[in-house]
Amino acid sequence: MSHQILDNGVLRAATPEETLEIEERAAEPAPVAPRHMTVLAFRNRFTKSEKVRVELAAIDNPAADLAQRERAAVVRVGQADLAAATYVDVDRADTREDVQAFETMGLLDAPGRALAILDDEIQAHERYYG
Image (tube, rainbow, N blue to C red; front, side):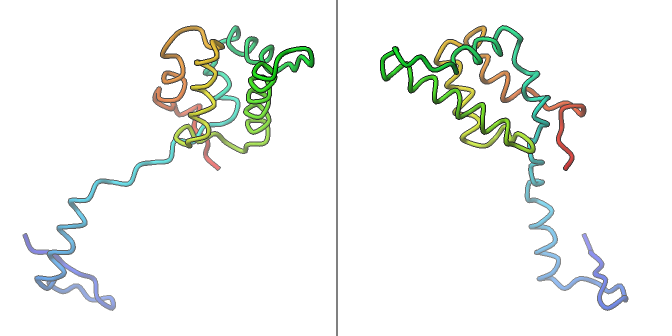
């Protein structure tokens, strides 16, 4: 297949080296679009009962043992990060770890919910366009 190159405003035939580069680039996979969501859309992926459990799990009980207090702190840190975010990147490691931790803590409705929240296709109304 012959390729044309626009060179200083003039079309010319591509050299063999340019043809090779064009064909190599054409074979590369397309870049993956970032999976960014609005904060509200991300929160809406959680059911109301899940949100309630997350809120309750964030409450610090000074009389609780250290492990329970650390668990509450982990939840509060995740919630604070979400509140400070402009958008949510569902592929970020820390975002994924937080949601998976919620599942491990029993805060989500069922096993596998973390992956559904994180990996379901982002709909047009959920996408962050900033």
